[in-house]
Length: 222
Length: 255
Length: 56
Image 1 (cartoon, chains in turn blue, green, yellow):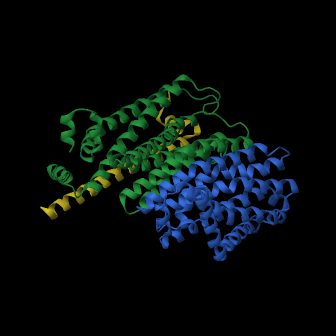
Image 2 (cartoon, one colour):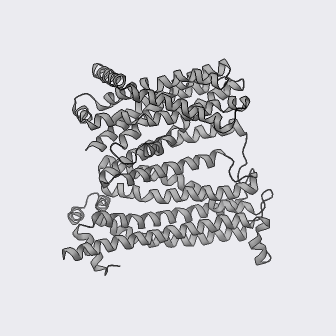
Image 3 (cartoon, rainbow over the protein chains, first blue to last red):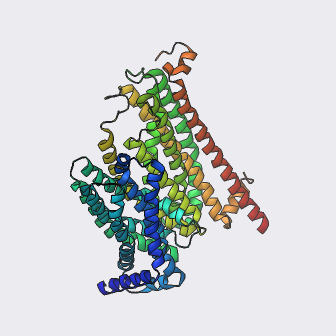
């Protein structure tokens, strides 16, 4: 089973590398959205420092949702997805592999991108480090929850808007703890509780979500 | 199909899993729940407006809780019930359970909206602003989004069975997340705002609680009546090609 | 609770706008739901009736 999951991850990563545009566009979208906030709010640096965690996290949420269509849609279009459903390997494991690959090309780059963005908002080093750590702990859960939405809406007209409507409310806890972690450090407190909660959410989601995603895929494909 | 089940005895309740039987049952029950809700509402509002005194801190504005709290509780309760029926429909592959779940959603969403609207109008005189991002109202807003997501997903899928099952998965994922969302919003709120005002001050007079509880039951009976009425329409819409549905409609003179 | 007069009852100690705004909109929304429920039933019944006529 591990070998099969490894194969799925490797294949998806290869496809992502070959279609670099998707991955790069998601990252660009993330940066553009973050840049919009100061343009909307004004360049007063104290305000920007305060809103930075929230803005970066909201942008991360949006970017991760918009990148979801490539998770299943491409395989759905060329029939690979149906093949995956028919293999003897447990669908939940395969799905976990696909989501892991998705996170490696979206969540992870977003986390890395947070470093220069923290500079844009003049975040002190401790807060910037917390932001990166929080994104690292929380973005896996974003990918997993988003995958549920993507699986449920496979082939539907609603597009990204429908998936967003379904998934964004579920992402609220991650947003709260993720931004809250940086705000805690900004207030001189420890972000340990926030980060542990984020990690716990990601872990719990990685165990439970694959079943929901697999069920959703079966429903969408029958 | 259902008549042989009746003849065999056994577990009688399962006969209501057949749309035709459930349609009849719902039709018989709806008027009772509607009547109950009206009676309870009259009693509750009478106690609330004519027996309950003026509140020491909030004056007369607190009387909004007699519809705010019932609506909020119903919004939460109906979501859980909806997820329950959706789960039953998913596990046992029963159509009626799924139809019930889809019938609950609009009423649940309406309850959430009423909770938000009345909460805002109560918040303005109490806290000075229509919306203060307190934990409970914010959680209710997210609950409204969850309802809307359920309805949106269900309407986006043409095939009724796929729609039922997909929405069921969404409802189950949602119901697992609701406690987490509620907890995180509580955390978020207390860190930013400190203690929030509780309804009616630190303790509500017994008569106020009584009126509120009567209204909770009134809303509950109304919700059941509305859902049963709606599910009958859902059954007819889905079963229109079947003889029993056409016979029923023709027998009632197309009423 | 003795309101004294109907105008006192309407005024709600100065909070009349908020209280009746809350109750009023709630009543309107519930009425709208009931109206929509009946409309949906009427449409469903008509569809079934026309389908049975078409086949009968």
